[in-house]
Length: 82
Image 1 (tube, rainbow, N blue to C red):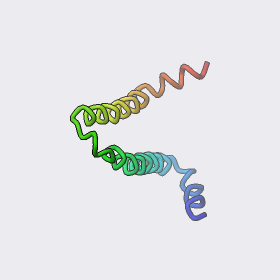
Image 2: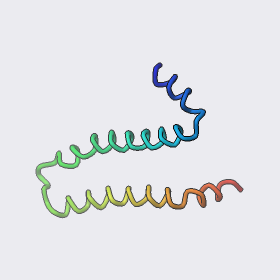
Image 3: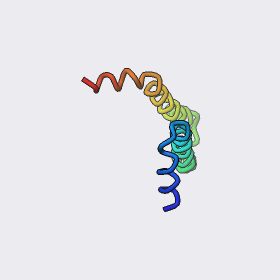
């Protein structure tokens, strides 16, 4: 309940809105990575370098997709405005 009230209070200020977006995105990434990273090393039978490279490529690919979306955000929005 407290979080809802704080969110409603700071939602009217553009400066705080941008900061809250950064905080929310960072928290989301932190929670998802903290949950995912231990599961990547859970399979002790397959400790090969190929498995490591595949997992690392998957994470870097996801980061790359997020970066592309951030870079071309305005173009993507423009595509769906029509």
